[in-house]
Amino acid sequence: MSTSISAAGNGAPPSPVLSVSPVVLPSPGRAVDLEVRVSAPVTGGELPIILLSHGQGPSNHLSSLNGYAPLAHYWAAHGFVVIQPTHLSSRTLDLPPGTPGAPLHWRSRAEDMTRILDRLDALEAAVPQLRGRLDGSRVAVAGHSMGGHTASLLLGARLTDPDDGTEADLSDPRITAGVLLAAPGSGGDALSEYAAQNLPFLRTTDFSRMTTPTLVVAGDQDASAHLTVRGPQWHTDPYILSPGPKTLLTLFDAEHGLGGVAGYDVAETTDESPGRVAAVQRLTWAYLRSEFHPGDPAWKEACDELTAGAEPLGRIESK
Image (cartoon, rainbow, N blue to C red; front, side, top):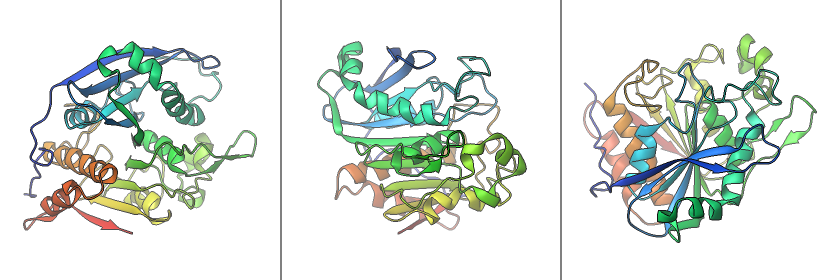
């Protein structure tokens, strides 16, 4: 039995959370207007922001603003404003297959996050309870699976656009920290035949200029055979192949769902583990807390708790 990690953040009780959706941002040139969910503690000011990018998967609604409640609620209950867009790749939109950018809309996903940061004033106007409470100088991006790919582009990773051959630089300097959860790794011969043929934007992923401080979370049983021939190690590439400062959290016995971060009790989680989800909640929060508040002990305390005991849930390494 692995040692559990407390979901409590730095010993502080969670705050009540308000969550508002859909908040609609008019988006000329986009196939449909951008809809987001905004979650925040009901009290407090100078709240840092986490942009949370959903993955894909077989479920109908997890790939939208309605997914990832275990993370969004936890982060909001512990002092962040969490903004979740419904990307154009979401099953909930049911866009025609011929929509430009289909099927996964890799470029539009990153542009959604930039659009949100450009329109924070509109979000505050739409959610009056947030007015004057956002700290736009402290912004992080987080993403799971395909959302991790989106987040990596915003953090500085590059790729060659398979449609026109140009280098895509979608980084946003307003984002100063990141969390990549089971994110895709490098391209080239690391890809499966399916990924190389059907997801050409993955062929040229380059992490060498992803300089933003980032926590990479990977499961040591996350084979993702439909995407890679390299097995679980592939998901550590955003750490291995990028310059520091970076931190890698490897979760023992974790598969692609990392215990169930995409939603409560969802059938597609192949490694369901409330303890593992609690570890992801606590460690991701603590990492961002200490990044935005230098000297705050949250990260050290969470790391110490993770590795305590005879059978820890995972290991941490940094560079």
